[in-house]
Length: 325
Image 1 (cartoon, rainbow, N blue to C red):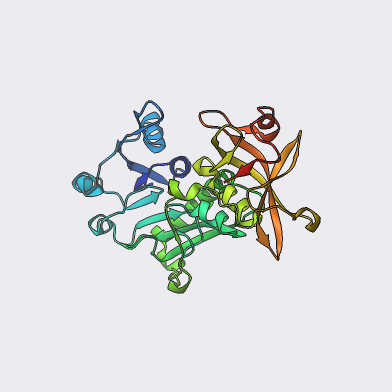
Image 2 (spheres, rainbow, N blue to C red; image 1 turned 90 degrees about the vertical axis):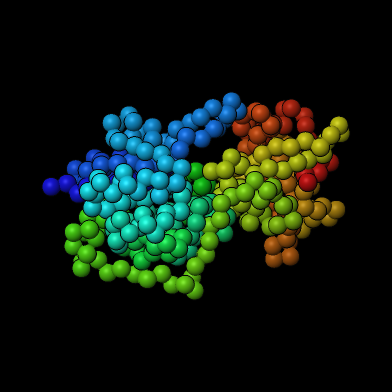
């Protein structure tokens, strides 16, 4: 007999988990709950969430309440055994958690208690972490603070960006969800819940637009992590002076390195170095008393597609005297 569950989710990460649950033949998804339609894109037209689109395409009942408490009565009568929450995007009330005591579970894209919150994938890369993973937790009222049912780890490769890491975690997560959820629901004594260590908590706050501007005074290692981490947020922004004006662009891909000491004279963060037909690099802050540089691989001008630096240089917007701000 299938286990009746309701599924709460919004993003494409959540779609992948919903699909895995549905195809497993272990669970019957009796209701899908997602975020309301939002205006998006240049035309600001209403768009359905990825999860809502999937639910409609697969004939799953779906609701999109502004607040979860508005749907409690409807959900109460579904006779579900548990609720699975993945990248839903709303704080759930205690009233909702009380519908399924100890059986509202959440799949989170980090190794809790590290990176509780909205942007765990980006923050892990930005911080230079070498390991991350996915955690399955029993939901508590406090944000991502529940007891851990299980986790799966993955290495963060040194040049991977948040888009690619998102895909890897998305594909890793169903293994944890399918292996541990059934055991937890039907044989809870076989699962030893782990309390989160309060001393190890870090928070993955939502990425704000104001923090996406690059600061050339930081070492190239930190800026390389910064660029990789913010790939999911459409790149980092910067500006530069040319003869006519201050122009803006986004940087999407970089490589890091240290400047030979013979090149350090008269250079400071934001200066252009190694300008040739294939690309250019920008001087960054010091690491171990030596200036560092960031080789720019992929850029984007406003309202234009991403291009290689080789293509960018053909537009003659920068010279060796250009200063990035």
